[in-house]
Image (cartoon, rainbow, N blue to C red; front, side, top):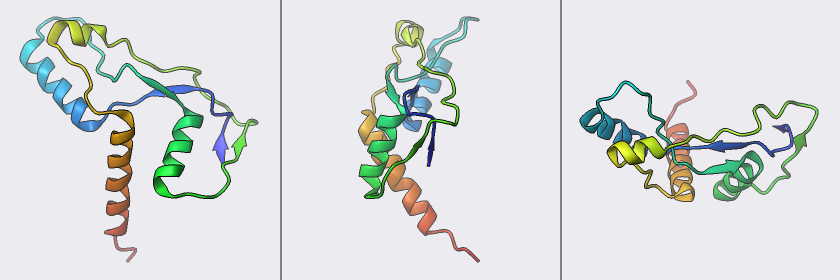
Length: 115
């Protein structure tokens, strides 16, 4: 059961891109203004859910409970300052990062003993 109707959008940043951005900022950014690190791309929760289902081989029905809150309609960062000030731009394609994350999660869960 998924809350809401799946219409809100979110932005995701792959961990290796985040690490690269932090290093670039530490090495090349020396100003007091905050900088957003992000991919600058957003995806709806509905599309994300569909992609996760496909990548995990889930064949069941996805049920949306519109009686539950959607949350904030949109979350996407303005990442122009990071690009302008220290050349940061996320490199990992979304689908590849999602696949790697799912693979990592599945291998981590399978290696944990329930005892």
